[in-house]
Structures are given as structure tokens and as C-alpha cells.
Image (cartoon, rainbow, N blue to C red):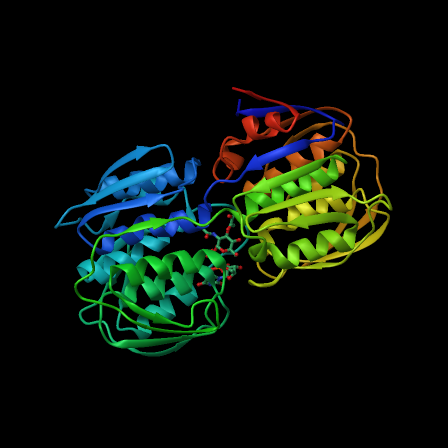
Length: 418
Ligand code: EPU
């Protein structure tokens, strides 16, 4: 039997929740430490299982890691073994971010083809093409990707799509040369700014962070650094939905509202009152009730795909027909069948989902298909009267720290059953 969340729904959530550091930043900052031998200190690292997996990957390469709360100290040795083992990398797609630092540092890398959330096809073609343009040669060996970089070169690279992972791998690999790289159609996600800040602290020169064109010059003598992880905008957005969907009022603290701009605009359009400060956001339903709205996911600064399932759950409570268009992942509607078991009316057709509301959701046994879909089911179960049992919560644990304690702190009736 898998681990489950047992939820008694129908109670409004109220109060303040502190968000942790962004999983999708920390998962890149930890392997970036491989670039420079010596002691790195990374703070505000979230306590989620994907981070534990990344730490195991780094340990397997000889990195000594200590954690004190959210502060991670990494001692990177002078010699590292540039091989990432299958049993670890197959658990998580982000292990492909180990490629860049290993290539920059050792000129070669052997990484088992990554696994991770089942979100559709999720190819690596853009990573490989961009790195080939930098002089990396790839081959495969028994399920491993073998990368060799006799000499890394600079030049201009244009990504076909602003892929977060491909952008990061180019920047990480570029640390292995002092030739200038210009990356066009780069991703602009806020978590990338953390990585760039870390690379600059190590000695790189980087311009254009947060724009589609990044110019960078790496360094052959990188220094160990201290870096803090940005607050998790996706965790924050999830708790804001949990407040609004239960007709409560939730404040999230530890997140820059500018990193949630379009999501907050959409919530306001749906009928959620939003109040913001420098590092906090409060959300509660307006008196006029929830209204249908169309949602289109796009790379940052567009509406984040990682908040699409939670928003769909909220829209089941809204009056009217909402059309959701998912442009990032082709496997992101796996929560639909589960929400339908709870009483939602959602039809999907390729990239689109049509949500007709309001529907009176009821508690039901469901299973989490991936991290964010699982979070959407938690939101729905908190709002739906009756008992819900959510199976496969190991997937939710990959990206949400202390979810049970945080929801209980807001007054939600949730327990973990082993
Ligand atoms: N893609 C390709 N070829 C490539 C790279 C990407 O076809 O070489 C496709 C992917 O299959 C996907 C789209 O391009 O359809 C976007 O992929 P991207 O590379 O931008 O995403 P990622 O780096 O794989 C990160 C986050 C995701 C988040 C996306 C988009 C991490 C570890 N993961 O994935 O987070 O949804 O960016 O913002 O940073 C999550 O946290 O639940 C999660 C899935």
C-alpha cells in the first residue's frame, strides 16, 4: 500500500504559511556546486524528497554534504567521479542538470537517461543540440548518456523553445570555457536568476538574466560560494488556491509577488481578492463568488504550468465554462479523471480542458498522478465535503515540504497514513 493523505474536507483554511525555498532552483544550485572544489553553503533549501535524491547523486560523486535545517554545506573534492548512477537518476528528470557541471569540470560525463514525473514525452533534444553546438559529443552506452567535451567553445546558440532545463545546462556547461556564449530564446523563470547569481559569485560574467538573450563568459578558476534559494512561487500559489477553494483566507510569506504576477491576475479575474506586500500575498474569495476564466500556460512570465492543475480544481467551483490550454507539457491532465471521481465536470481534448462549473465536489478515494496534480487533488479534497483518501503521496512529497503540518497549521483536517 502506498502512503496516503486522509482529508476531511469542507473546512475553510485560514492563516499564514511560510513557503520554503524553490525546489526547482535548489535542484540546480546543488549540482552547480560541483563546478568548484571547496566548501559551498546553500541556504533556504526545501525539505522535499527530490532534494534528498539530488544529495544522494552528489554523494555518489564524492561530495560531502551536511544539512542543518534548510542550510546545506557541500564540500566538493578536488577529484570527482563524473558518473551519475542509474538507480538515482532514473528517479528524477532534474538529474540531467548534472551534465553541465560535470562537462565543465571534467570534460566528460556519464548520466543514466533521467526519469521523473510522468508528464508526457519530455525529450532532451534541445539540451543535446545546444551542448553539441558548444563542442560536446554524445553517445549512448547501455542506457547511459555519455558526453565528452574535448574542448568547449563559445558562440551563439538559439533554443527552439525557452526550455528551463536546456537553458540551465548551457549556462552550467559554459562555466568550462572563458569563451563568450550568447544564448537566445533563453528561459526567464525566476529560479534561473538564482543559478546565474551563483555562477557570477563563482567568477562568471553574465548579462541579460530574465531576458530572452543571456550573454555569458565562464571562468576556468571558479570559487566556492554561498547562495540562498528564492522562495517557492509554486508552493505559494498552491496554498493561495487552497485558501480560495475552501472559502478561507490564506497568507503566504517568503515569496516575491512579482514572481506570481500572471497567476495572481488570473486569480483576481476568477474572483479571488488579492493583497500583496514585499514578500507576502493574501488571497480570499470575493463576495461576488467565483467566475469562470480561461487559462493558457506559457513559459515565464506566462501563466505557470506548475499551477495549472491547482487552478483547474479551483475553477470547478466557478460559475461558467473555463477553457484551459496547456502549452508546456503534453501529460498534464492526468488529474482530470481523479477530479471527475470527486464530481467535477471536465472534458479534455489534446492541449485543452473544458471545466464546467460550479460542481459540488464530494470527498472520494483518488490517487496523485504527479507532484502538481497531487497538489490539485489536495486542494479539491480540502474543499469537498466528506472524506478523501489521496494515494501515491510520495509524488507530492517530491515537491512540497511538510505539507501535512502546513495545512494543519491553516486549520485543515489532514493526516498522513503510512
Ligand atoms: N523539451 C523538449 N526537449 C528538450 C527540453 C524540453 O522537447 O530538450 C520540452 C519538454 O518535454 C516540455 C517543454 O519542453 O514539454 C518544457 O520543458 P522545460 O525544459 O522548460 O522544463 P524542465 O526543465 O524539464 C522545469 C521544471 C518543471 C516545470 C518546467 C516549466 C525542474 C526540475 N522542473 O522542467 O517543474 O514545470 O521547468 O516551468 O526545474 C514540477 O516542479 O512539478 C515540474 C514539472
